[in-house]
Image (cartoon, rainbow, N blue to C red; front, top):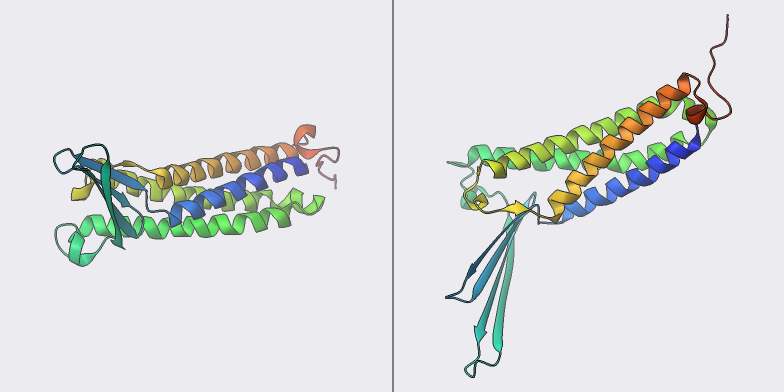
Length: 217
């Protein structure tokens, strides 16, 4: 199998790893924003996998009405919380789903961290490139599957308004990064599988000059 598909896949896998790391660290998976003209206040709430952060910005006009005085308050807390989010009462199902989505996404991050090392090892020699493509495709499939599961759990939670605060939420940057990660993982899985199968069948575009031909016994 040619080295080029492995090189392209390697850099794509590194990109998915970066997307996963950034998504896990950010709190803006889901974002809601409300504004009060009377109070001159904007409240932005960001829901992450394990934290919720609220930013309150108040801009009051000055007495001469030529400028504005701004006040900003920012605070975060654990999310979901049994005490504040009703995890032991009416929202127990949501809390279990959201927490499970976080665990699955961390599992996807683990697979994406192993993948670049596996690709470097696999493309080191021609003999390894011939044998290892199935294992690499399987690893990427696991990363993709866990990413899709986390995506589905989170998407279902806000589409069905499983949590009272999700009435007006929209997907944020972390949600988009996580989605991009599993989409890229899926493309890598398909690309490696198609190229590997084509190389085994002797197609020069996939196998290179040393195509794989069975040895007659």
